[in-house]
Length: 490
Ligand code: GLN
Image 1 (tube, rainbow, N blue to C red):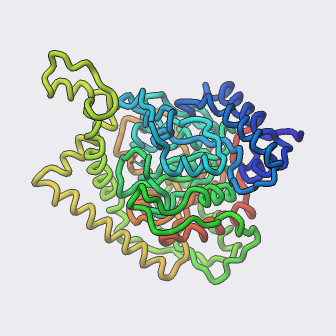
Image 2 (image 1 turned 180 degrees about the horizontal axis):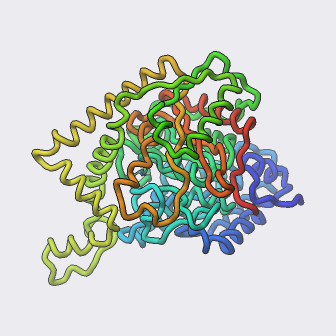
Image 3 (image 1 turned 90 degrees about the horizontal axis):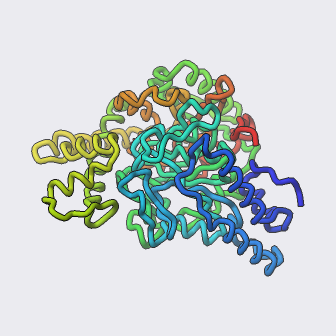
């Protein structure tokens, strides 16, 4: 047996498990121990899966039967953390909300069944902003998730628990969801990598809805190769989700090449975004552009005429869809309920729904207003029109440019509590990330620096629909040229 490093990549872990130099049971036990010892400080997990060890043992048994010769399972024995809005059969799934605090799904989300089919071990369910509404993981009924690099700072959100679990070595891979940046933001704040795929490339079956037309299941890991591996396992058409695209699964991971040349390809940088970012972020971003140039790219600055409509359009659409999706939690059909004896309907309904947190209530009320008769055209339709203009403008940039680059977040991770009281101030930090959701295009976030040793900064790269392969190739070459740490000390 070799010494087990908890920061091992999934890719290598699968090799070691197959050649039996690491036992799945031992590795899983180490991760569970780490969570036990460390997660009290971070709060990355809402629920830990206590069946993980049994699963690990069954994998070791399988390997001894096949003698490690069957290598068809791409994630054999890899512990994965799943955001708590993705359904896992028999494992509590709360959306970090009191309204679902006891909900145990009776089925797996499609992506979860695909992970299981490839031998991944669900290690637990991670903390998030309630129903995915937030950018810091401060709006959770289960407490704040802390940033492993500096526990006084936010981990980003809404998939903060997933990102923090990776950076704190409490998982090897993670799933999140991304409606307006929720895997990229925490990845950037915690110095891990994340991919928001093209809308429809991954099935949303089993993802608890927040804003359907914008959201995707997103992938997170500590290395680009692992991200590609995760995409190979999860992507592709699903008969259970009509919004998935008619594309099959594909090998994204074995063709990555660290010394690739991108000569002749161009990167567009949205000037207004860089000008309006925190100086620390702009500085690191500019130095990342040098790395892209070093890889062969030509870098140009471009204007995005409709940029100022991006946040209003995003929040208008997201709140409208949220108010309609969350209407189902009425205490009768879904979720938390109370004893109705002697109560009138209005009282019952209000009491049940008072379980939602303040941010969720705010969005339900605003969304209901946006959709109400007389205002629908003025707000919702207008937002959809702005969305179309932004999407067309981005797609026209892709006629000349392979990639659009921005900082992932315009600010470094800030202190817990610093922005909670001002929702608008919090919404503005999503400026760079919402673009990809409005347009349905893929976007990746990779670490580019750790400011002052404890404030990670990320680079976001977007490309046209279904161009994940290019994003992964560039990110891989970037990471091989300029590596930034992905986790705190083991
Ligand atoms: N911060 C954004 C919001 O609150 C994005 C969240 C997400 O992607 N789930 O809507």
